[in-house]
Length: 418
Image 1 (cartoon, one colour):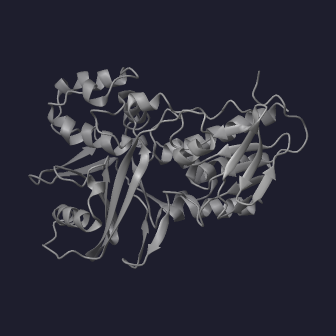
Image 2: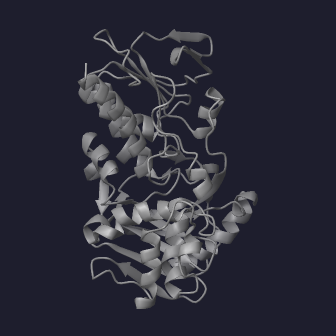
Image 3: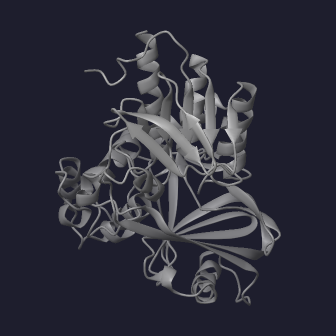
């Protein structure tokens, strides 16, 4: 039985819980159906972890976290096209990824624009790539790849950790391949790095809010969903503090929330229950840089460095050890690596901001991936969205947007049948 067979020609209203990236993507995608849409956000801002804000310590606007979008991320680009924000991204002309070994100072680049140049690679690396393409759902990256090869340390390991936020010994090989197939597997045209010129909010959040407002979508902030009343196979009411909304017979609810909040609302469902952390550090630099720079780092604690004007932003994924240290200790560990990466003279520790995301993503292991839920649930008018759902992609910007689009497409398909 189709899960939306109860629909008829009476009014349909869509209730999206959460104004993070997946919720916004779902709403933007649904605007083409001219359905009444209301978004409820628990905080006073949209974007979730993908946003920009003014930091009073740095006296600069910074991103909550560093994100690199590639030209092959079709869902992200479709979303930005829909909200008219493609011009807010700076796309590099070359599909080039520079790296630095912090231990010995070696620098190299992975350049897919030039016959896919790989550092220290040979035919001996081909078996690992072939095995990765055919990896089973139970295999980890370290089990599949030849970890003794130089290419593993210089490319596969840093890519795995940054894409999956999971160490190669634990990370799902098939999930890593899903990304490589859609980007590196399609050559330079799909691998050009795209960086937000001014910030994530300016590229992904603010334009969406503007479009949704123009389309008549209601966005209510400081509205935390406390409970969800489920009866007879469907959601019938939403409780926000003292406010209770009774759903009409054809109303639809999309939970576009973090996995922890969704689990509290749906305690009977089993979701991934292991998470990995990410630490981001932002430092004031002694001078401004004209271009948008990024650099992959190995041989230290820092993994990726992004430079925008006079702000250096460092990302450390799978940072379960680093996150336990004090912010001051984290800054003292990462700042010398920033100086080395940028060939700067020794400088005293400048103003900094450390942002710790303890539950940044689910642990993207074979066991946890199997627990990711689909968009449709056992309740006929209740859908799920979020980078942690079963998109076939990692918990990234592309994954979050894909989840929102998939939830919206379920509704669109059913509306077309009415």
